[in-house]
Amino acid sequence: MTINQVQDKIIEDFSVFEDWIDKYNLLIDMGRDLPLIDPKHKTKDYLIEGCQSKVWLYPEFNGHNVTFTADSDAIITRGIVALLIRVLSDRTPDEIIASELYFIDRIGLRQNLSPTRSNGLLSMVRQIKLYAMAYKAKTKQL
Amino acid sequence: MRLTEISSLKTISEIRADFPVLSRQVYGRPLVYLDNGATTQKPRCVIDAVNNVYTTYNSNIHRGVHALSDIASEEYENAREKVRSFINAAKKEEIIFTPGTTGSINSIAFSFGERYIRPGDEIIISHLEHHANIVPWQMMCERKGARLRIIPIDDTGEIIFDEYLKLLSEKTKLVSVTQVSNALGTVLPVREIIDTAHSGNIPVLIDGAQGVQHGTADVASMDCDFYVFSGHKIYGPTGIGIIYGKEKWLTELPPYQGGGDMVDTVTFEKTTYNELPFKFEAGTMNFAGAIGLGSALDYVLSIGRENIESMEKELLRYATERLSGIRGLRVYGTSGRKIAIISFLLSNIHQYDTGLILDKMGIAVRTGTHCAQPVMSRYGIEGTVRASLCFYNTMEEIDMLGTGIEKVISMFEK
Image (cartoon, rainbow over all chains, first blue to last red; front, side, top):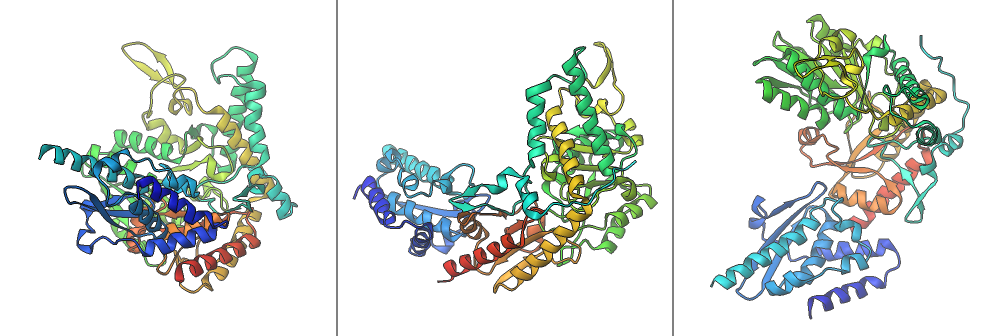
């Protein structure tokens, strides 16, 4: 599936719920399924510090695709991290760089990804793109 | 002379009707506003007072020869008098308008540091301070080679008075402490702190940001040297705050900022400063904010400060009882002397998760460190959920908070 196909699937998954409580319950469940970062990488180097919650993000590049594992200290943040990883992990750097995330807005969680809500998520998206750019540059050099 | 404080005959629903924001909804649910420690809502009279400035007499103060400037200047000075009377200062000249508590403390830290602080001197603050009463002193200490000393706190969130006594020495040049902890709600024994410091001729600044709106702030009876607070936390507009300083200090301190209105004569060789309080009010002041603050203080007096205090005491009692019954809820700040703030954590649930779900139910609380990271470190936590109540809150709202918290627990416990 392409990045946009995954985004559309998530939008569909969430669209069956009218009540916000069900949406958040789904998010909590998704947080539990997150590909967890290896505890040894849960260090300052991979920490994205937000004022409200923290996110750890660890990238790996096999020369073709970038994969991410992550964690957060807050469960709802972890749920959104899980969604971002589902969309953006195991992709080529070009796919990641070109991606435009619209699903957060469409599933009604936009407030969680705003600069005023400093939970680390917006920085996480930026960081994912920065890693992709760095790996792309590295591939060119080789 | 003090204004006589009349008893309020208003019912709680009449009081709530004075605050337009309180009747709105969020996410289709009635707003339960429990973030009064961050900022309070504004009564209609304050909104009208500010509106009235801009619709009927807006004009720059202390400058014009024309009618509107006269009215604006007079209203601004009336507001100063209202502040003086409200905190029971001796003279109007001792009341300086600032942009807020942070601005007030930065200004005093700069001026006091320039005038009095030498390398090796010490400033004492407490472990309960908001960052606004830490960082300006750190900056000043760094500039002057001085040292910041900290009064520790115990597990209940009270300062350890004996440790304070040990910190006082001939090196101490100023004590700057909060009247009430914004993170925990603890009321500090400011009277005792001041008396002890004064016995060594050490001046004391009291940060009244969380104190002025609860109970009675009386600078004469406290005998503090400086008292600072913000308008927006006492039902007034944002962007206006106060420095009260004893005249002898304000006369000696150099101004923090230079500009218009604060000067007497200006030549390129030398400028002499205007008299108090104008020496500290450089540039065009937030006169609309000051006038709004005056109106807010009138409002508080119309409800009655003793009434407010007893209403809030009852809210704290009920909230403590209601929330303490919730399994896994731990309250931080358990002093017997507290304002109506409940800072808490739910076991194994992050404060951000709690805050987000409460928000979805229309309940506004604050989560995080509350700009008081040292307090959080003291308890080995990264933040709390803070419900801060004031007199317009109701028992029903506390019940809604309680039910909301129980819902949070059920969602995350699955």
